[in-house]
Length: 356
Ligand SMILES: Nc1ncnc2c1ncn2[C@@H]1O[C@H](COP(=O)(O)OP(=O)(O)O)[C@@H](O)[C@H]1O
Ligand SMILES: [Mg+2]
Image (tube, rainbow, N blue to C red; front, side, top):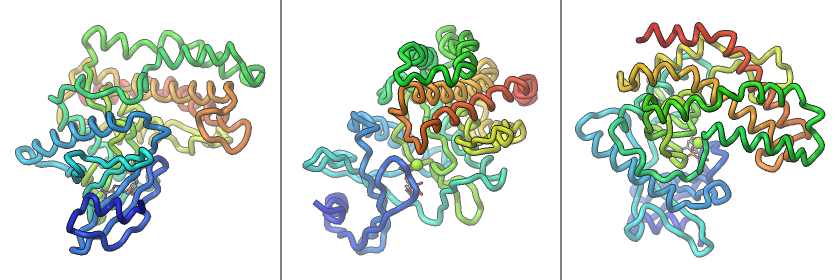
């Protein structure tokens, strides 16, 4: 079956007129579909390598988008993706097992790849804070954990120790300092899990891919229109969505910058994002939850760094690499950010206290 035929399964008698490639996503294959009546849609084939259980992913997306849609009627706010049905479901399974879904294209929107203005970072934070607000009463435990232990840092640390022990590629001797960096922070990794057990950190719906390009902004005003890329929606903690945004958004350099003198944690961008997230979330977080936001930022950065380092030790089996030390270079940028977060810890906490 070709793409046009698949699009027509969703559009029924409203036949497809044109098909174009869309966007710069790295995970799914995305197409822009224009119908004969000039309406536009997005058709996407899901990546099966990353999502081995796509039905569960679609189940999560259905539950959340339907919930938000119902709320939009009474509360207003940003749009949410609206999926078309095929045969009573929000996706179509092709004869090869490929999963396709189709939803409305958001007109007059831009999705940015880079933060060139603080404002854009602020509005993306408002969007993801707004996501937390919209889903504040949603029973998160109803969602599948489609990527098990995705942000279970204690588990990631155990995996890391196993990689160090196995040392399959005899690389441990080239990164002793970095290994020590991870090991010496062992007591930190349990904080979120323990806070959750103590009832201080509620389970919430998290997006888990809170990149700038996953928020569509109004092309004229720059304000958020819609959050997209919902595949990683799962039960989780607000502070990890926040933290992951800080990890990649509040850094002054690329994730694989070799010159560590260029890599800095920007306290200023952290404050910009924090303000946006809080503005979007409209006060739904408890004081205890809020005090864990700096921990979330450091946790996500540490976790990512240890995953890069573990993959380096394993021989680059998970992350794509362009040269043999690529994963080690990535790990070093993360650890540099962690160091600077630690240096700025009082300020990071003070920014929260100022809001409280
Ligand atoms: N509903 C939509 N309206 C407009 N553009 C969209 C829409 N959905 C996706 N896009 C564009 O397609 C790109 C890839 O889609 P996304 O769902 O983020 O896939 P990936 O998981 O591959 O990143 C987005 O960055 C955006 O530019
Ligand atoms: Mg995306």
